[in-house]
Figure 1: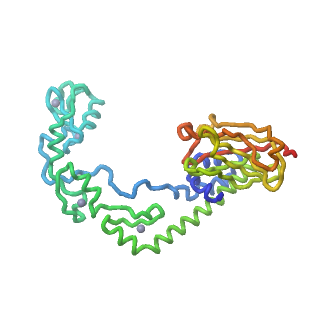
Figure 2 (figure 1 turned 30 degrees about the vertical axis):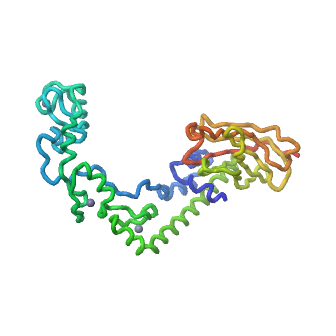
Length: 338
Ligand SMILES: [Zn+2]
Ligand SMILES: [Zn+2]
Ligand SMILES: [Zn+2]
Ligand SMILES: [Zn+2]
């Protein structure tokens, strides 16, 4: 299952990769291979294309007494000055006061302590009549400004991204035409997914080979466990070779007090060995290290390791989970024995 184990961490921002790239043994050639297509796995968090601040489409001109004295639009989060009663957007006046402690309209002395929220102006602005943001696309909705966002979230003519845009579909469609786009572009979407899958498989092979080379130098095997906090039963790493013998790691989640044990298993032989386990932290200075040099004789041919190596109660907050992954290293630099 090592294919899936590594997929999530191919993202160039993950520290696994920066680790790999920063390591002295990573050659220029392989580093370049990693950065190729580096941005392709970025995931959109939202399929909605809500444009950044747009001009509010008021039907009538905004009355003078509701306009900000600096930007002349309907005041956003309106505040009024105590002494001279001038109305501004909170952001506009705070920015102006940073430069000069005076009211921009009449130059009277003014500080942040002399302004207060203007609830009446806010209420009036909220009740002004607006059109939909998409009126130029044909939406005929008209209503109070206070209802605009709620309408925009449901507007049939709002522009949405195709769900396959994360895989490269560039279609810009409205909420209303999305179902039709989906049904008429099934094949194109499938093709996009196929291409992504092929590229991911490719990147995965490159990453594994990079790791193999790093491990050869260090006598260190690195195991990346994705989606760690959702794991329940025991999980096992892929096999690796150290000191001419095959080994693999296993995690047992039945450890006491929300701990998890990490064990080294011998594969195809019954040798034992002293080894070092490393639980990598986002902050390398806080990596957790455990030396195992007491492999019991009656555990020959079975897994051996620290019962409480991973404290699962505060993994994320303590920096041991990065992009959902837990990273465990094992170093074997002593000779195996009977
Ligand atoms: Zn303003
Ligand atoms: Zn003033
Ligand atoms: Zn609309
Ligand atoms: Zn599409």
